[in-house]
Length: 357
Image (cartoon, rainbow, N blue to C red; front, side, top):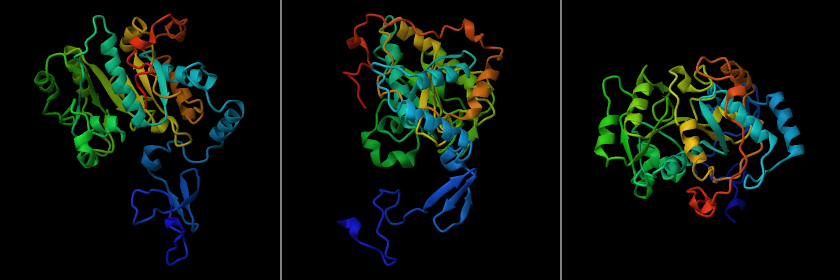
């Protein structure tokens, strides 16, 4: 076997499919706080938190303790039949952190999966409107953008280098406009260029990460984009996988300008590197339509129960959000779970029989 061979130092080649097969990465054997420890004992200051992930540092004993305790109680929960306290508690915490602006949370395992789910949920919204709008199959994103590495998320992205190899396979239902520019507004023109009523949503990062390098929107940009989306009856999807969960000074980047998206993706800082976790926050506009339709939520992956890696700071931010001027007291919010209804699953775009990862 190929892995039985050894190099000149007597070390067997890695069995991992690394990013570069010709150059193995540096090996990390331990991490604590802000420091990474290499195999030869050297220490590296983790200034970027990996790919903007380790926001509370490595080896936090509070997180370790909660994760260890949860594993002894419940390790897996299949969401087709069951729920569990960690899922309920985290989802409520996330909804509360928006001061009542978002209605429900859906947990997945990565930012790419979150974007895929956001795109599918946008489609379901228009299929469950009364009357339905099945002609809405298109999305508009930005050229300098990166929304994930699955085929769906990459199809939304405008990152040319990462799209190049797979371009013939990517969705043709996505068009791109320029990134935020104080002197240029292309979004309304792009809506008009598409067949009338064919666009599901505009997708954007409030602060562009991988594709531009932490570039924020100019003041007023998000409000202007939301106005254009509303004008054309489309949804606004904000990708906060990299810039969200407290990274900009508020729990959610959109809170800086009080522009509430219809659907929001979150990740990275949500788990802080302790567990692979990401998710969606869904606004009332979307939830109300689903609730008055099939009532079926996204059925893509079983809801994760190892949610203990969420940043401990989030709970404090959620409490602060209770006093947000735009929010409602928690006792007045309509977040209670309703009794199941007798609805035919076959009518749901997301029914398990029709959609699978």
